[in-house]
Length: 271
Image: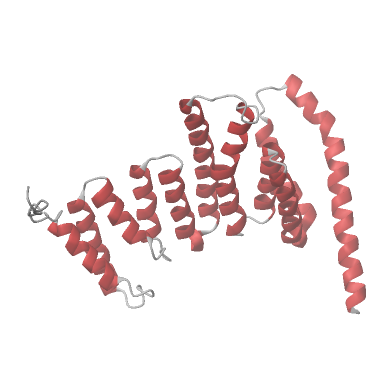
């Protein structure tokens, strides 16, 4: 079979899949309305999940990753328009079609945590013409951040070899969007203790726990245990961090250093 004929066949299969999805959406719409009116106990989200993970994947078959990329491009279009609902729908579709791609999950979480709150707060302020209580803005920011953490948790479950990346992202969101250093250190701990740990997670965990949360002894103990695991497992320290972590543990064990008393500088001559 010539390459040109292969391309034609793939294009025809993709068009057929898209046509089938379009027909399916129109056929399913009356049934969805009937279900919503007569069976409210059956949630639409469960129907969407079943269709996305079963029927949709079966129709697309080996073309799922291609369609996932198309859906992501479409999500970016809605991102530029600041259309939260449409953007999230297409991002979710990309992650459903290609759940083993960490990029979709991580970017979906970052957009949800860092971009979408600004869109909504701007709308609530009517384009900046009205003031908004800081408590309301903070509440919306926290709401989107918690939503993003759910995406990261699901993505970590579906990508076990990339869990450290997901937990490190979760720590950043917890620290900068939820303003919750206690939750952030827990995520950094997970990122450090994964089979493929994040290189900066051990240091970030110890610094936040020991210096920001005021528990240097607990941070030093954890670091010592972590260093022992690195020593016991050849190849577990590909970034050569052991010496740096050892120095940090010593600083935490020493506690805050007292500054020597300063000698007052002499005043101007003649005073």
